[in-house]
Length: 241
Ligand SMILES: [Mg+2]
Image 1 (cartoon, helix red, strand yellow):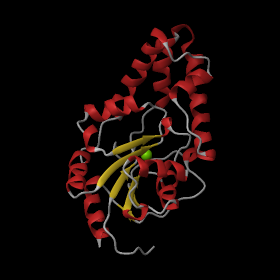
Image 2: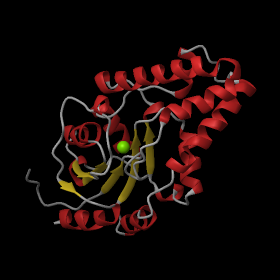
Image 3: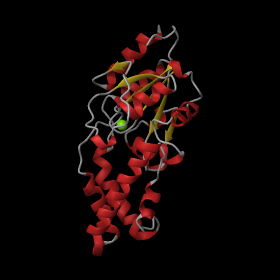
Image 4: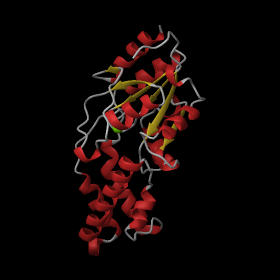
């Protein structure tokens, strides 16, 4: 694809597998941790129900780009996302997740460099989690203040690759020109194909083992592929002219 000469204005990042390295964790154990804390007397039944509920949420996201929340998912299997039992379950769930939410070591330096070059920085994540939780994770890793804006699908009706999700992310960082905005992601459908539908340039990180059932109907062809986040400043510099 050919682009007019222009100055790059912004870079928007996916979160899981992009700003955090991809982990092949046993996510059934995540639900088992929740279920054991919430309902120890029927933990295995609840675990199975939660696994199936999450499968349906992401199937709906893939096929219809409809977003969901953790609270909705829990309520769909008769769990009340309020009160002490839920708080205990959520704490166990988040404890399971903590090592998988750690920021890529390249990220703080990259974000700082982009910002000092006058480039706006954003996040667009397909997620069931609240903004508060994502911000807590970014704060823990010292980068919360390095983002100009973020959109979490749990707060909007759509998921990537719906164009409205990308437009919401552009608005969140002051509406840069999509053609002067790069989207960085680890999924060829949700991230690369999706961002290209709104005219963004795309940078692919090819290290995630995306499960077959999470693949979409189209693989986008990225404008650039990098092996690590630190290479992104060079890509963006090349696109400056
Ligand atoms: Mg990802």
